[in-house]
Image: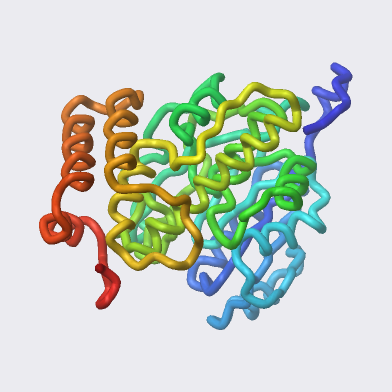
Length: 345
C-alpha cells in the first residue's frame, strides 16, 4: 500500500520481517525459528509472539539471542499478529504459523518478485505429514494473474495458500488488522487476503517456498476430519472477510457487489452441514435450508476448476441435504462431520 511510485524506489531492497505466532506448538517452534534465522536473505527480522502457551514454548524462545519476543495472554491469532506487526521494522511481513516453516530462499525469492504496488504475494507450500513430504502442494488450484476481486465477488473466494504461504505489505497489514471488523480470533488469512486486491496488486511465486505441516490439530479446512465448530468458524471467518473487502471497496470507489448470503459452493455446503449442529460460537448469517441448498447447487454448477464427476456429486449432495428429512440427512452428515454427544439436533 505504498504511495511513492518513483521508479527508482522499485529497485530498492525491501526489508523483511517474519512474525511467528505460537500457541502451544513448542514441539515445532524451534524449526520455525531456525528457518527464519537461516534465510539466505541477510538481516531478516524474526519476531515470535507467544499467545499464552503453557507447554514450555517460552523456554525455547528465550534460548535465542537474535529473536524479538512478545509474551501475551491467550487472545487468538489476530491479536498475536497485531502485536508482532506493531514492532516490526520490515517493509514486508510474513506471518508464519509456528507449526509451519520456510525454505532457506523464501524471503530472498519473495523480495525479488516484490514491487511497490504489491499488497500481498502468494507462494505455494509443500504439505508434510509426520515430517514426510506428501507430494501435495497448497493451494491445489493455480494462482490467478488478475481478476481476484471479480472471483471473490462471484464465489466468495479466490485461490490462495494458508497463512504461512503469504507475504504482506507492512502498512497494508497493520491497517487491515486495525480496521477490519468481526476479526474475532483465527482465520486472519482470509481477512488479509480478501481485502488485499482492493488496496493493490496480488503477486505470486509459482513454487513451494515452505512447508505446511498436517498434524491433526490444524484449524485449516484442508486437514483432518471436520467438526461442527471447525465448519462454523470457517463460515464465519470467510463470510466476514468478504464483507470487509466489500466495505473497503465501497470506501475507495471500487465497483463490488456483495450479498447478505454466504457465498461459494463449499462454504454453502458447510452451512448445510452446520444447520444440524448446535453451533453457537459466533453468530452466522441467517439462512433457510432450501435457499442455501439451491444457491449451493448453482455455485457448484458454475464454479471453475472442478471435474464434472465431483461437480455432479456435490450438486447431488446439496440437493439431498436441502430436501431430505432430518433422520435421513443425519445418516449422511455423520459420515462427513464429527458431531459430539448432544451436538446434533
